[in-house]
Length: 118
Image 1: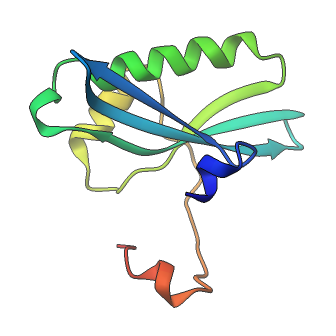
Image 2: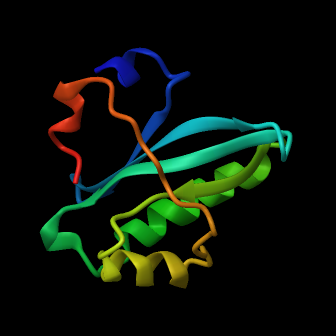
């Protein structure tokens, strides 16, 4: 609910098929001093089972990419994924994304939020 009440934290995008929510993604923002621009982080990607492999995520991604390209302060799109998710990896690569040399490190400070981490 926090993000819905405060759009500076991010925004959700949903895809509908015949008035049914088929999928979603969320973006959050990171300022990059190296690139002097905002990076939009794609998070919370989900496509309902019955709509998978039907281009729902691709459409969401292309919409987001088009929006980002017209924003002068957006310098890139990024996301992270579980290293074993081969299906997601293929999808992201087909859309022109590539794996970077960066790895994610984390120190969890709130044990309640750590429960869902893998």
